[in-house]
Image (cartoon, rainbow, N blue to C red; front, side, top):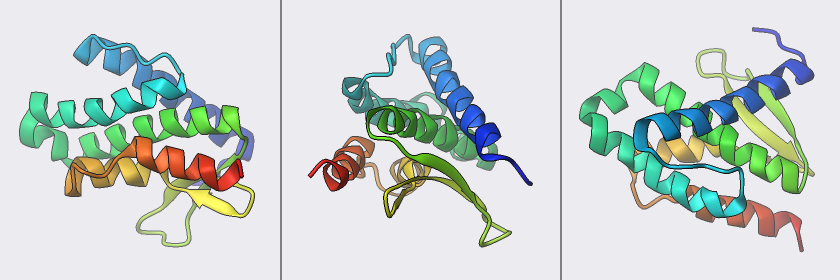
Length: 137
């Protein structure tokens, strides 16, 4: 899949909007695009498991949840500090999107995946704060 950087940026902005809409519809919670709302994202990720049980762990659901919330948090980061979305196809069997800023790449969707699938103690909020502190020193 070839995509220009502007197409990818637009896709990620759309995904972030999708996170806002979906969270409102599914959980009656408001994600407002603020840094404070990232803490709510940690709760919402686990709420998918509570509401849909094993259905939330089906591959299509995991893909969607990880990408929309990863985009949501990544867009907050990008608006605050900057960065550019990058579609990494180095492994054709498992392409992924990261946000590149300065000399770092941030896999926000990957952290959502870890929280959803592997370890409910992983925090997207903590990851965001660490990414921020890496760049605001």
